[in-house]
Length: 612
Image: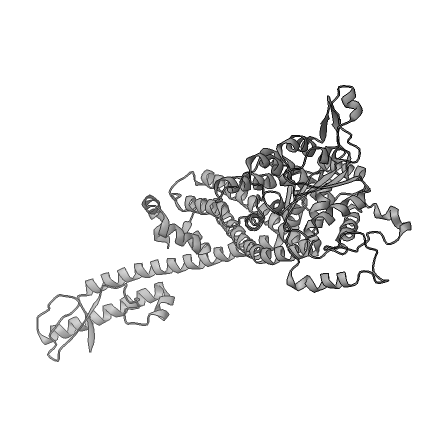
């Protein structure tokens, strides 16, 4: 039979041994009764002879031989062992009570966070989206402006194959009072676009092909004989570029120095020096075309005058059959009268009949100028759009190879262009999605447009896992480093709580921006005014997974911020900060704190590690 024994030897007669043995068993029974009465739950969990949980006693077991010799336990030591077990059982009970209290607090925090998180969707989030004003639309006489421009685009696209983007850029350039450069091989409907713009505005049209031997008289008109007789160096500009509203100049980079000076002044200032007079030029838009990029530095100034630059290629193999069918239908009774030169878009008459001539004037020059003036006076440019312009210029000039130079004048014109684009789309504020047009205004070569577009797509999606997450980690670390013995915890806790609330508001604004971007991305597929349907579809396919991931990451970050806020507020209410509660409610941040925190942070947190 096994007995509890301590390292003490007892020698004596058999009778004395039996009496001591009986006295020892009686003491053990009294010890068990004391422990079980003090903690009935422990008696159920640990039904041993001592009533003590394993590992909490200092008893050692031994055995008695048949000769009643061996190790015996003195009654005083037995009483002392049971007393120690009782105290340790009391600690176990307190730990379990603390654990139950901890579960209640964690459940309270979780419910509070979930209730708040459910309440902000869509309530508070919709309010912030409305405050941002990205979805506000212009009311009044220009409410149908978008529909009119859509009709204008459809009219110019009639009979053209794979020229949706070029048509939109041409119309936008006319509304902005800027110029369009088309780079591509001959026979790709570059001149046809210029003619069509002149037909819908009913403005004076001028067209010329330049060579290296072209003289100023070809563009600006011949010298006046009567002026020479009167010792005046003036030109007859009637019917030439200074008199035109819409112009098309092919092989424009073959212009020599005699032509460049006057041409630059016309393109930028809309002025022409005729003798000793400076005349205003009614030029709305000039379409330049070239088979090659400028090679000499003296042409850089001319190249910079074209705000919009677009590479034009041949019709793809998939749509070549449609172009050939269009050519085969010319001359048939059902076909329109031939009005152009047999290239892409040939044989297309913009007006349905002669009596419908007024309907063909969908946008007069005066109307386009009025719309530009209203847009510059009413449309706002948010700070995030301005930051994109600043950052992309730095990216192109300092981080691209080879660098892409972007002049101050070009950036100034881009801002005006974005405002006109937003107004014609029916918005009072420029959207980040409008900046996708920068791929046609910042590229110095056609192949750079894709690089700019990829950069813009990654920038449009708000950063949901950057600085905000870093700030939240810092706030979590500050809470963990708070000394629980500090009597001034209430003041410190309130300061931290205010910072957490400020971070929460920032995250709400970012989430509202992200939700607005999602709506804008969806509307892109329905048709952006100045982005073709094919390009809009590709943009949405690229943006959808990025927006979905950013939205999920931002919601998780917002939920963690709210959890930390509720935990800190609970500590303020209790008057003491218990970081072990944060270790349970925010385990990912706790793991990061333990692994990556400095040694000083580890030492400062030793005062509360006993709670875990």
